[in-house]
Every structure is written in C-alpha cells, then in structure tokens.
Length: 177
Image (cartoon, rainbow, N blue to C red):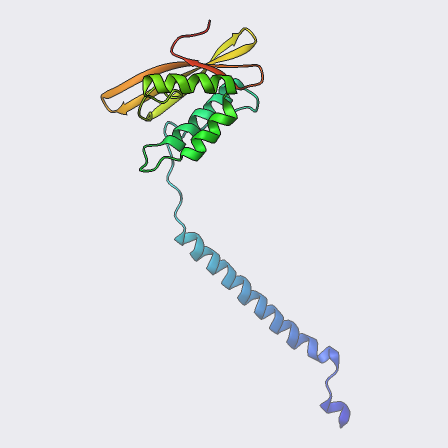
C-alpha cells in the first residue's frame, strides 16, 4: 500500500510539464498582448523635414571651429538676459585671447563704449563663421554677426586673426590680407 500512495518521479513529471507549459503559454500570450498594446499606444514620430534639421560640426584644432566655439559661448554668456554671466565672458576672453590683444581690446572698449568682441553694445541674434585662409603665420576667420530680427536687421562682418597656437590676436572690421 505504501507503494500505491507514493508517486514516483515519473508520475509527477507529466503534471508539472503541463503546468509549466500552460504557464509559458500564458506568459508568452501576456507578453505578446502587452507588447502589442504597448506598441499600439506608442505614436510614430512625425517626419521632420530635412530643411528644418540643423547640425553643427567641428574639428579639434581647426581655426574656424575654435572661433565658432568662442563666439557661441561668448554670445551665450553675454546674452540678452537680465543678468549676463560676466564671470564666464571674462574667462572666455582669458582663454581665447592673447594677453597683448586683451589689453588692446580693453583700451578699444573704453574709447568706443562697446564690447570689443562683438563691436557693439548689444548681443547679436545670429552669427556665422567662415574660413578666410592663412595670413602670415596665422589664420583668418570671418565672423558675421546679425543684430535685430525680421526686416530690421543689421550685419557686422568681423575678421578674427588667430596666431599659430590658436589664440586670437586681432578682431577687426577689415581683413589682414
């Protein structure tokens, strides 16, 4: 009688297998239905026109990239904000300008009552940076600043001269060429 009450492992497996199989079917079924409902609730992103997409790229050590980085950060620091970040704009000047040029620029600013980096009293709405080639032992980059918006814009073209170690040695409204 003891043998009849006690089930052998062989007798237990079919029941377990059926339970495990049923559990897998249920889990897979739930997974598929959950996945299907999750996919149904996710909206496909709208297609963006390639004309609206913007990208900025640069190369380390390239004069155009260096000047673009400087002007982008400088304009952000000066900004049209209630409180411009004077600490950042000062640090940027120290990092990007040669000490001799920084001194000449400070004298220019005192005389003209304007920001010497921007050659203006306000901050531009847009700017572009383009390569103007080698000049002596340095490299010249053209920065075009656009002030205002809509039909009332004014553009200022600046020529930024970098020394061979990529520090700005001059910003002027005429080319060094």
